[in-house]
Image (cartoon, rainbow, N blue to C red; front, side, top):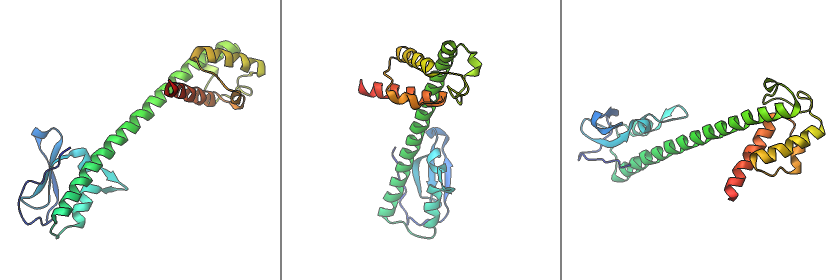
Length: 186
């Protein structure tokens, strides 16, 4: 992302406003006075808020009535670039969370079928909060058989710590982690 500051002038911050240019696909100009502006600022960067503050506007408003030095202009340009990078990171994090949730949902749906079949119960009785012993009636032999089935189904090795897994949600999380670690190890 390139942010330009094309107009020569006194660099005095007088009136701060954002103008979206139709021909620049979501990028606009941040005016500091009637003639001077920062160019190529994405709308999402201008609108980005942190703690209720619109950072781009707040920084300029703090300098209202002041003359920006070359260093301050470069600093503001770096702020804009960093905010764009932060927005991109937030999108990546949100995407990763959504993918993880989707993965866990798929694991649950598959487990729901396996558990119901293995324990001889209705599939709708198996929910994330179900406790294997208390809600689903699984004894230690049932759990051992279920573990063997899960290992084959997901092609993972389940350690002895699985005996501490008491709910379907904990099992989903365990399988999800094992699948992530096995991909990392490959």
